[in-house]
Amino acid sequence: MDQRLSVAPVVPRFAAAICEVAGVTAFYAGGSIGSGDYHPGISDLDLVAVLGAPLPRARRERLRQLHRTIGAARLHCAYVPLTEISDVSAKHVNWAHERMFRRPLSGISRAELHQFGVTVYGPPPAAVVPAVPRAALAEAARVELRGYWTGAVRRARVWRTDLHVDLGLTTLSRADVTIAEGRLITKREAIDRLPALGVSAELTDEIRRRRAGERVELPEAEIRARAVQVRRVMREQLARLLRPA
Image 1 (cartoon, rainbow, N blue to C red):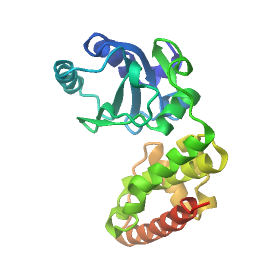
Image 2 (image 1 turned 180 degrees about the horizontal axis):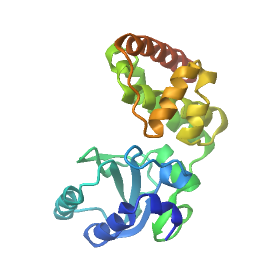
Image 3 (image 1 turned 180 degrees about the vertical axis):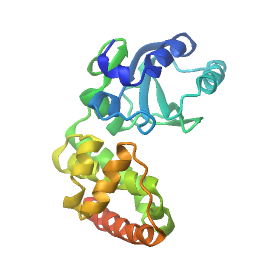
């Protein structure tokens, strides 16, 4: 077993549990596990199961119950039939946030499998998942920014939450590099780059501390000031990154 999986022993156990139920032919862990940036209890588990055939309703229901039985928090898994894996627009069964729904396997997720992916079983990701060209990867980063974050900057109150502050700024920083250089960086690297995007050293350190698992308490006045700062940075940088060439 790949030693990177030792930080999340639930992954190989989960992979074994769903193998027969979902007809899995290959199973990968992407995201922070492969990049060495995984923090138990903080990081999501971004998993991809490649299937021999699409999931009929009965198997989907069995899979839903299995997810609920395992009950692993922050476990996200995309179920992608091998026959559809080349179609980046096809929507596949996904489990995330304690529910099942359909969405495509994004260009970012595909590129992460190539760059950071850990093989739990099956052939290596590059042998199964088509590579993402540089231009397509940059556009996938723009899609992430347009899809949620451009709407979020219109809502002042959401920027009072640690979740929006941390996720918004790290997503922005990662997208900045992907669009400019056609490569992916880890969340750790993204946090280190935040001052170059206009984020104060104090807020950068605050995000870094939370990422390490530390609880950071702020008085109301600092929460309000932080929200103003983050919303301004997000608005300015989104305008720059999404500006037509």
